[in-house]
Length: 109
Image 1 (tube, rainbow, N blue to C red):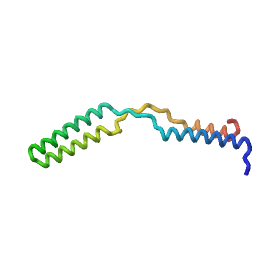
Image 2: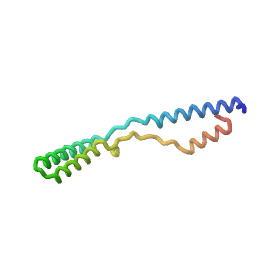
Image 3: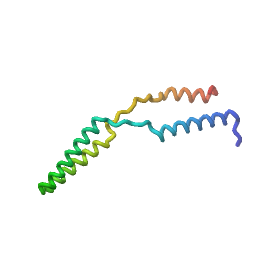
Image 4: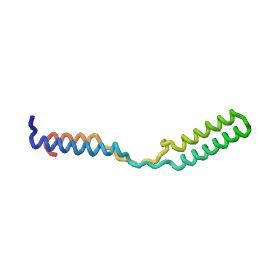
């Protein structure tokens, strides 16, 4: 089935737009971590190492295991992305997209 020139042009434009939006999904904007959360995580990690060493020196396995648990919590806080600072993004208006679609169907685009 052969397409008219207008149909080909519309399909090519849609393909260009789709390939442009895929790049946004594949390459997300860079994110910066929250420095306060990293600092707290490192301090908790160091406290956990201290607890682990105290458990080994005092030969108290329960203290060593607790120190290891605190260490894990500190590591999780340090690498956690929940507190990250994200740049504000402008969401697309659905009505704007709907208007563009209507104009495309009417042959204005």
